[in-house]
Amino acid sequence: MAIEKTLAIIKPDAVGRGLAGDILKHIHEAKFKIVAVKSLRLTKSEAEGFYAVHRERPFFKDLTEFMSSGKVVVMALEAENAIARWRETMGATDPAKAAPGTIRKTYGTSIQNNCTHGSDAPDTARFEISYFFSGMELI
Ligand code: CMP
Image 1 (cartoon, protein in one colour):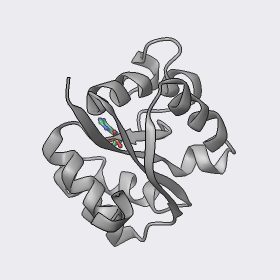
Image 2 (cartoon, rainbow, N blue to C red):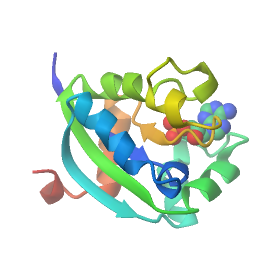
Image 3 (cartoon, rainbow, N blue to C red):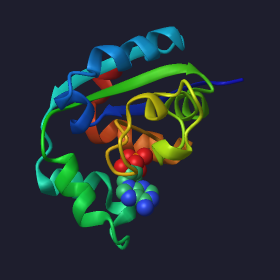
Image 4 (cartoon, rainbow, N blue to C red):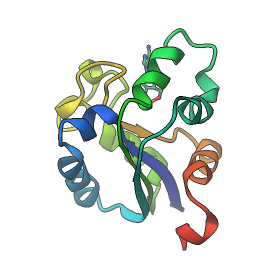
C-alpha cells in the first residue's frame, strides 16, 4: 500500500463549535501524520476556487458562503492509503448516513454542515494540497 497525502479541512461549523481539538484526536487515533497545518478564513472567491468542481451544483452558493463564514483548519495528512482512510474516518458526506463512530456521524448536523472535508482521489488531493500549501511547507 502506497504512502499518500490527502487534504483535510475542519470546516467553520466545527471550528465555531469548539470541536477542532476533538476532531484532531480522531486524526491522531487513526494514526495520520499531520505534515502541514494552518488556520485561516477563506474569502468567498477562495472558497469558490477550491470547490470549482461543484460550480454547477445547486448547493454551490450555499456551500461557498458557508465555507467562507468563519475560520477553518486545513491540514495535509500523510499515511498509507491516506485518501481512502481519511474518508472512512470522516464517514459519509451526509451525517445521517455516516457509520457510527465516524467524525461526521458524531459531530455533523447536516449534509452541508458536516464538519470536515477530505480529498476524493489522488488528482484532487494534489490540487487541494497545493491550493493551501507550498512545496516547502510539505517537507
Ligand atoms: P465536502 O466533502 O466538503 O464536498 C462538497 C461539500 O458540499 C460537501 O462536503 C458538503 O459540505 C456540501 N454539500 C451540500 N449539499 C450537498 C449535497 N446535496 N451533496 C453533496 N455535498 C453537499
